[in-house]
Length: 403
Ligand code: NAP
Ligand code: MG
Image 1 (cartoon, helix red, strand yellow):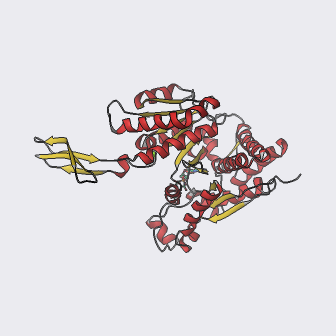
Image 2 (image 1 turned 180 degrees about the vertical axis):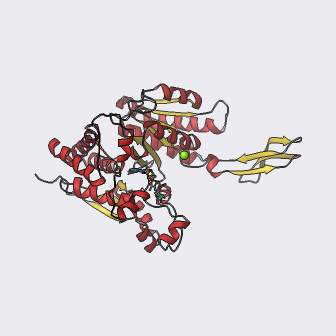
Image 3 (image 1 turned 30 degrees about the horizontal axis):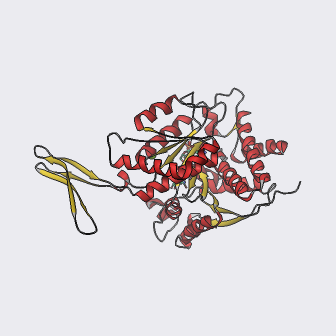
């Protein structure tokens, strides 16, 4: 069989620990035998980040801007323990944070659904994708504890030096707390465009919610910016794609989400996204089955698994013990990137291959063959637990039959 050709390389960001082991297995077993795999390789493993003073992370993000599609392995975000373990020159920042800052993107997280693993909300038969606005609000706030007798005001000084003052609260009979926070029109607009672009790329509706009835300036600004951008730039495209943009109040959204069957993108303000993404991930069953894609407002895509480097499994692996680590989210990061590359390059063979690889993966689990984490959750009767590599070989057996 001739290998599938690629026109443009993918940006490949290698990573750390168990996911680095899985990364190589996926390439060796499931990709290289079928695709003439073209990638521009960046080693984001902690050792090489340290060696390059983290320049490699910046370079990989710049390459992603250039080529448009990247696939990333999970990476260690250093803490004090890692400083000693890897003898680091500095406590390097989270690579995801660095990449996100350069691409100015929004992260979309989607669960992979398989038969046998029922969400805690059984009506959720399709995935709910959460898009979290990862800038500002309470995450960049200023706050104070104030003593009794304080008078607290919000003061804004404009370019000409004019002051506007508004009373927050007169603490005349008790002490208390205050908080100041912000967001920017630019960041909100980027968030809106990333959501609308991604919705078009996967042909799903966008839901967005805030508390604009109570927060008549702050939350209302989010609602207005979304509406303006939608009307001016996306409405026609959404109509043509048969999808919708839907705005409601956050409490109404929560009630509707619980009653829904899934199958849409839920755009969340920063705090809502923080809380709801954990709720949705847990309700679908497993972090190891959650994919993640960073989408920039100008349409650059970076795919990864939502989980980390699975450190505990890696130490077992180093001791030569057998592991049963779930590779599905990392595998779907690759298929997501290959599909997007194929779409942009107009190479349908590549898209078709990636879709078949996803189908073979799901079929493997639905046939009852799965790693330990899913074995604990699955309600299938004929289930069997397999090791990390064995799972990928089982996927390959099914893939070979589909091609
Ligand atoms: P983690 O790697 O996500 O793992 C937490 C636990 O979840 C694991 O110990 C394992 O449970 C289970 N798990 C996660 N993924 C799994 C998989 N694919 N298959 C089977 N079980 C899985 O999080 P962590 O241990 O908190 O963090 C480890 C490192 O990852 C840290 O250095 C952190 O900085 C980094 N991290 C990176 C990213 C990223 O690059 N996007 C995200 C998060 C964390 P059991 O051990 O009970 O089996
Ligand atoms: Mg959270």
